[in-house]
Length: 139
Image (cartoon, rainbow, N blue to C red; front, side, top):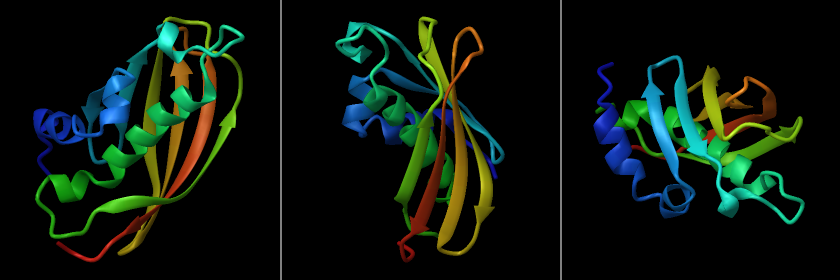
């Protein structure tokens, strides 16, 4: 599959919440998608640490990009949406940015499962998410 990173970025620019959070699609292959986000005041909660919703949004966009790679690269398949997601927050990020990396654990005709690991720029694991996707009928 030929992946056009600029086409992916253009498509997901319409994900306005993720775009407003400053999330960037860094790389995408069939096996791995990487997205990142610089941490600013907008991302912090009242306690001064990165808000869980910001971490989840980063992981969720990484999941969405990976789960829809085939469709966005020309495969004749429907859009994959999140059916359920489970996230474990492991520790507060101490760096200035966060990176999410996605790995596909299982992909069938309509159901898929992805693992998304979020780390800070110091390499500390911040969160782990499992996303279950459901692929709708073809276009």
